[in-house]
Length: 96
Image 1 (cartoon, rainbow, N blue to C red):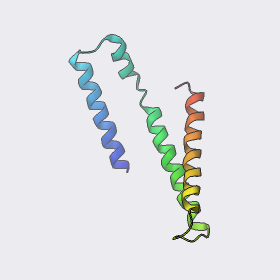
Image 2: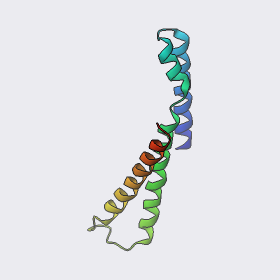
Image 3: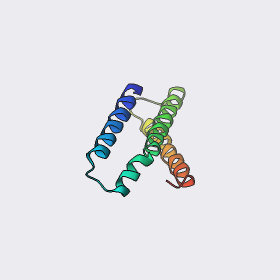
C-alpha cells in the first residue's frame, strides 16, 4: 500500500510539472497547482485506512457467527464512518 501511495504521489508531481512547463494554463491555475492542496486528500485516505483497520482489529476480539451475522459489516461501517467524520472535522478546522 505504501508503495502505491509513493508511486501515486510521484506521478502527480510529474503531471503537475508537465502542466506548468507546457504553459497551457493561466496564472491562477498555476498558483493552484503549486499550492499543494493535495495533502488533505492523503489525510482522508490515511484516516479511512486507519479506522478501517481498527474496525477489523475490533472484529477479531468480538464473538459472532461468521456465516449468518451481519454484525461485522455494521461494525466496519461504523468505523469507516468515524474515519469520514474525523476527516470532515479536521478539514473543516483547517479551512480546506
